[in-house]
Length: 244
Image (cartoon, rainbow, N blue to C red; front, side):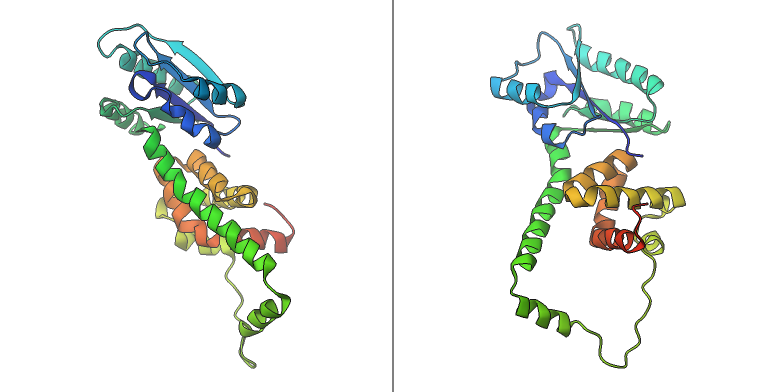
């Protein structure tokens, strides 16, 4: 199951830069904006994006004072973890003072990370670029002359008399591809389900779903490990006639 993501945003630190994430947000993701009288205003163009995007948002006014917003955000995080422990949490801030807080909750099993907007976008950008390359390759294959496609197909045929080796089931192959901590039957099943559901919509959607399910670090590691096998995973699903 894909985890719900909750973004706790330190507006005193990053202002309205978080609006760059809007195209990446899922329908069930939640934005929690912590602000004080010292938080910068939101430009009209950013406000228009916010109003046009169907995500959930909560505005949380904080009292001013030395590190006041930081302490109030940290306190609210504890409340959220108590009431919604299965979600994934992202503190959006450049302030490294949150890092001991993140480490504290990670040691207690929470799925949480602290990063700024640029770091989060950088983690997603390779998926966007690879998605565009894949789409270009598919368009080239579709537009290729029939004769060229036929010659290419013949050139890939196995020599006469050679025995065809039965391919290893993709589920078993995945166990050798992913890091050891993700080789449980449940994790493998979830990875295959995510790829089959989201790959038709693009690599960016797969990346986002893996991050939601396996956390920031785990999701990126799995994306890199499994990307060469995305098509094989989907193809096996189609051959078996099932999406599970």
